Length: 493
Ligand code: BES
Ligand code: MN
Ligand code: ZN
Image (tube, rainbow, N blue to C red; front, side, top):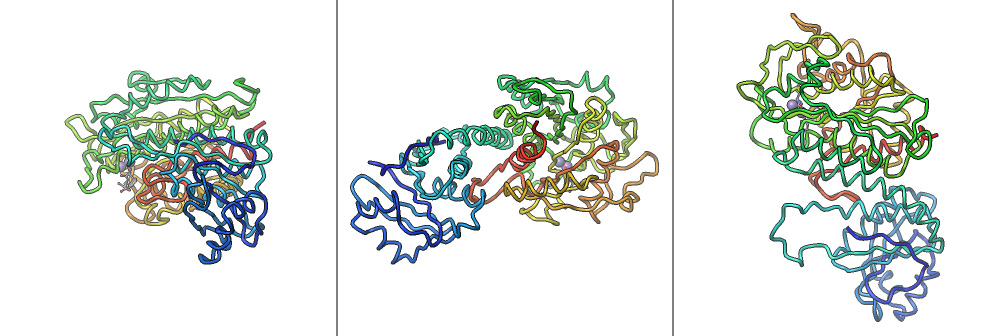
């Protein structure tokens, strides 16, 4: 990852220069200076390339003058249409194209300190790499970029804007690390240990093992876990920031709950072999909650937040639960387990009930890679949003537009409940193919007690098979920025 720095505008003596240009902007400042130093080569290059600063357009010029190795001009589009997403994407484009350079300076004439920090955020997010298990990578194949310096007249202000964004980026990276780790390494106990380390940030960390959860009566979560040789965990992360720097207020906390299935084989209702390795990221909901809590603590958010994650491995074995088993959830409601591959809702049922009983939340948001059906419905562009609360849904939708982590509201309706009626228990854990993501959400809602609640089905969003502007392919950490933004915009004192 490159270091991020901010400095007064001056032509760099070495390295590359990224020039951010609005459509229709005329050369001034550093841009004009550069063109002069290059004997008009910049203007000529833009002319032959027909580069006019259009959104997402780029123009690359090699060695235009002594010292500077490369100029990468990036179009921001029309000034009136500028957005955080465009600025982040420009930052991402810099890193995607100039990772073989040692240093890049970023010049623009028209950006505010906030906007400069947003460019830096895009650059950092795009620079993520997970190379822990590569032992034979040649130095030439590794990115060389060690510093991105954003040039701005208001250095102190830009730095101040960058600080919280940097904390958020660290939360995103933590989530990406957790989601990328292989399932033999990141089992429930190991994931809980990684949570424990977050106490360094000022988070209070509670860890529950099978004994504690057994005593509480977590029959649904423990039923999923019982086929695995790995012990389950529930981790509760507390951030008390509403009373100012690490202190709690009397206000109700906001609560986030994550599905953390460290590997989902399907259990006795086993999945087909093809692509099963993807199920290492079936803990992305939990990974996102953990990264979010790290981000809130890292930027000392003025909020009381609690993150709860249910961590289990779903395996077939002689001790595994069977299709037909009936389990008693912590809420007391009984569940007939028709399909052991619909395990996420069983895990969430107990953790959600615990969150409510214990903490009287202002609202609860759960995140889960819950259903393949949501990928059929929404593809890889929007997460599914299910909620009993219109105001919370609107806020989530707006935070999604602002961060680019978009959500689309799906229906909840009692009419779907007949699909999860059981002949011998209070409900069954699957409702058939029609509306599969909705019946899953209806199931979860049975464990929500008249509290504002939203469920995000992130099965289509947690992992990307392609590079995008600010996310290299692989774990996306979808939801960290969305919920960090939701808190920042509405729930900080
Ligand atoms: N973890 C899966 C959902 C999933 C599928 C996430 C593909 C990411 C990519 C979940 O536990 C599951 O297996 N759901 C089943 C539910 C079915 C048995 C009702 C599914 O979607 O097939
Ligand atoms: Mn499953
Ligand atoms: Zn699953």
